[in-house]
Amino acid sequence: MTHQVIQQLTAERAMTVQQACKLLGVSRSGFYAARQRTRQPPTVCGTRIRLRSVFEATGRSYGSRRLHQELAEQGIEIGRHRVRSLMRELQLKPIWKPKFVHTTDSNHALPVYENVLNRQFEQREANRAWVSDISVPQQAA
Image 1: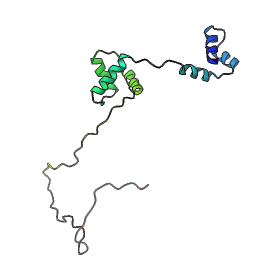
Image 2: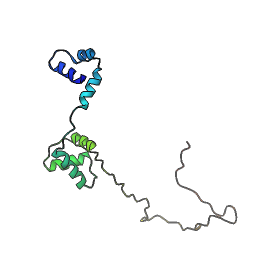
Image 3: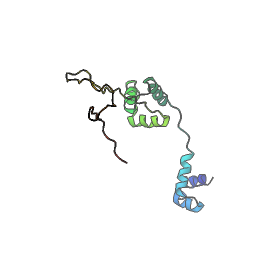
């Protein structure tokens, strides 16, 4: 109720927001926060529906840049940053699929040494078999 009085006083230009807030004992930040809270939620528009349908049709993998490009091809004039904020608002997050990486190159002309140890790590005598590890050591915490 107090915030409505302040809004009415400032609309009539009877006093400034600062003066009305001081008169009624309300902080200016509280007045502006209350005014922000009373705004109506955004309505569902065709752009939001189209954005969601394109996002789902692309397998939930497109980000704002590719969605912006796809919507432009469909004739929808919208900026990329607006697409990004709508994605955030609609909680549309693309799913990143990790690429398969081949770590072994078996098709080469380099010499391949024979496996003489054949997983027999326990030996009868010392210095009969030597093994090593080529992995990178972990950093000590």
